[in-house]
Image (cartoon, rainbow, N blue to C red; front, side, top):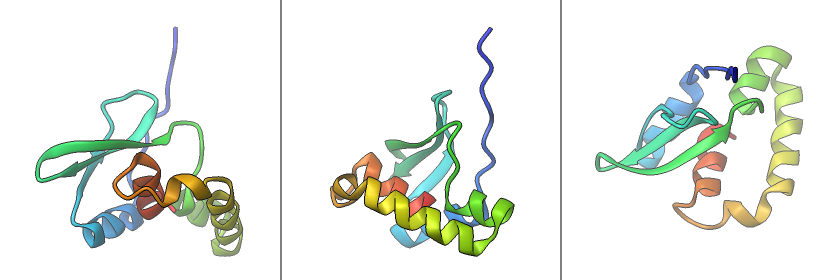
Length: 96
């Protein structure tokens, strides 16, 4: 039997989504954390379950550790972050 974690969306992500003028909800995809909606239309699913993100690291390990993980994430995903409205773009803006 396959069990997966549920992800509680942090206030940080809600605040970031508001800046982008998108709505976020828990993902209906069992492998993802968040679904992104623009004008009530789903445009992306982001955040792999099982991996942490900036708000989670901040809460669990502190801001300094989270800042370092953010830097490494941005290096690792540099190519994806620049494609406006892509999954990578939204993951960067909302989870990192």
